[in-house]
Amino acid sequence: MGFTYPPMTAILGLLNLKKKIFKPLFVKGNLILAANNQEIYRSSDNGTNWTIDKHIIAISKFAECGGFLFAKRVDKLLRSTDEGLTWDTAKVPVKHFDLESMIDDGKNLYSTIRYSSSFFISANKGADWTIIKKEQDFYAQTLLASDKYFFAIDNHRGVFISLNKGNDWIPFNYGLVT
Image (cartoon, rainbow, N blue to C red; front, side):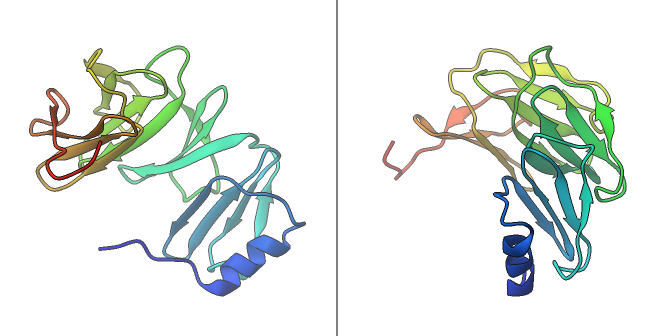
């Protein structure tokens, strides 16, 4: 199952929304979320119509895990159970939290934070977090999950694989230039 690009009408719709710069962008089925420093734009019909939430500002990242949407602000992590119509505050793994990447295995959420080599788990959809691996020897900017394995990508050290859901990591750079 690969990434599905939004239809061109959605892209054109974003470009015409007051010509604002959007980062990040989240697309799933007919749902599109786009954010800038002042608001979140939401479309549930592939970009034909848009609503604006001016109460949610400064979003730097969207993630979907465990049936929830997450939006990372500078000062907090927000969670939505209704595809971004409403948001509540989710707990964060550490005091100075800056979400780098997040994945789920269908049961638990896993995350890394920026400029940290620690790996966190939440068994209750982001309500509480526990550190499962502290001070590994790489910094995971991206996390990916398959049916059996987790993969972490460090922009400088390459790819790492975990055979036990993040408790241990080994280099997986065979054939890759690092």
